[in-house]
Image (cartoon, rainbow, N blue to C red):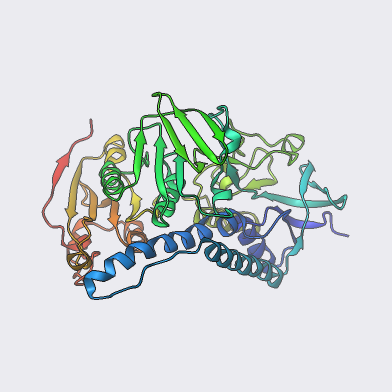
Length: 459
């Protein structure tokens, strides 16, 4: 008789949990994975995938406008929200089913139940009442929208990004509260679908942590396109009168809307998992504290993905899961590498980045050379749209190594993925310069920026 029922028991059927369960099962381990709701996690069900589908939908309105300059006459456009939501739900269901099929093909046991820890090696499945034991436990329960720190009267009248993806009808006027990825992306979605959109943010400009030039470019573009930015503001209360909402700021302003969406943070899903009983240490935000190998304070309990509150990105959760399996089941201790993770904000145009910002490079002690290029895209010479992308490279003055790349422009996310490979290989500016340009493209700017814009020394 084996000492435990499972070699690995995974709690959570999102991207990280599924990848770990598949890899471990493929390696011949006895794996159980419990999911209480639907496989796919935040990314598939209420995050990356449905959001990107909505981003595509929002972009079509602008594309239709641009088509006129190329000779296209298009009848009066009409958008149907219910069709978009229904088709999104269909695709989410298809992807969720694929997750299940892939786990089953790998040989892991799927358990539709809520799992809680009774001790480091014992799991209680609360619906069935069954108990199971496991040599190793992996927590991959993700995170959820949170408005912690914004406890104001009337907050019950607001929605989060979860509800925004399944509204029964599209509101005519929307207030989005926040200035991070989710706030910016949903503001552009609503605006692109024809909603009168206002962004309320406590900072002076959106996307704190991104390169300042990229933030400035996006701020200007949002304002030119009719998105209302109300910065350096905090909400004080929200009143509901009939079907209308009234948001009051700390500047004695009253903003009227049909919906108010909060995008002010996310919180790890660690409540009710029995982590305290098992001795797992948590951080201030409720996250599971882990080491470089994703191991918690209990030697046989690991955690990956948003529940650890490291980098809340789906590919990062998958990377952490693969490192976990290599470390625990393949005999190859593999620490998680969070350096040079490419990221993108699906605004209009997009912002994408990999590596250091100008500020973080200087704070890290680097003397830097900065190369920048701003231009009018070929497409918009005929469309007439006044949008100017910007490309920016941060280069180590001493070694010529490219430390960071930042792009504000159409298809920025597609471009930055390949740039991430170059930076991972420690590419130099000279190697960028030696690469022949592909013309006419926006991406050719990366290899044609020969004249240094300026240099800076660390303070």
